[in-house]
Image 1 (cartoon, rainbow, N blue to C red):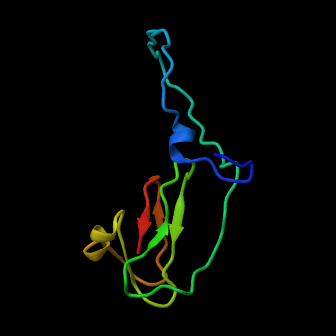
Image 2: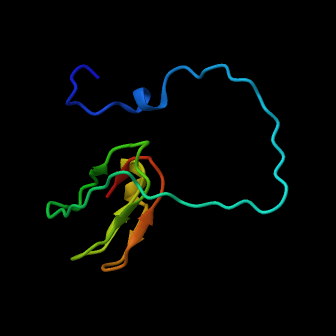
Length: 107
């Protein structure tokens, strides 16, 4: 990250070195309350330039919590790589598909 306006890279977010932390044994007794927190920020967008040629829709992003795809006009084929997109998952029109991984998304 050379300028303040640039987004950090995946390596900068994950960190190249892991600190040496002391290992503390933990034993959970009884039920544990778990609560999902909302995302700090988000984005909404529409694309009208989708073609039959596989293209990267979203790059890898370790900060991405969830991605919802909806094919409005024609079914889509999605994958994590360009090659996978050729035989990937078929998404019918008007069916929301929720993606919760941080890998790239190709259509």
